[in-house]
Image 1 (cartoon, helix red, strand yellow):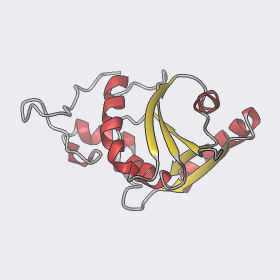
Image 2 (cartoon, rainbow, N blue to C red; image 1 turned 180 degrees about the vertical axis):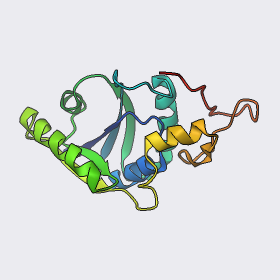
Image 3 (cartoon, helix red, strand yellow; image 1 turned 90 degrees about the vertical axis):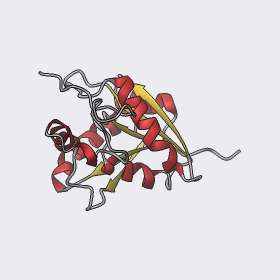
Image 4 (cartoon, rainbow, N blue to C red; image 1 turned 90 degrees about the horizontal axis):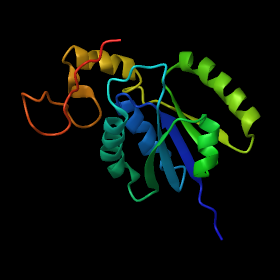
Length: 173
């Protein structure tokens, strides 16, 4: 029996960026099944609710499989390695935008290897055309009404169009 290679791409995805979608599109070339783990992070004040992020991710990720792999979108609140074990992942996919991301990711890999040395971490470099657009800048762009660069579909204000998705009100911290 052939074992399926299961990959896990974790993140808060608040909001989903073109960089996230680029990593997903490339990750499905490496695994048979990709689980996109949408995390809750109590230390962050998300712009989008968890159900909104789940719906947006399902909508955006579905066409990216290109017949190469299956994709599932799931939420998790546990430690990353606990979730990876639960979904049967043999590899964790992480995206790097710049050298500055490496130090943090290197520390995370060291800790994760202590928890489970059987699960590898693979880094994919962000497409240089997308690397400058991190989620923090995207939230700022939405706040400044420069919202047409989020993911593949333009966001609209409710008064402009009743179509999904709608830009949420900015929550104050």
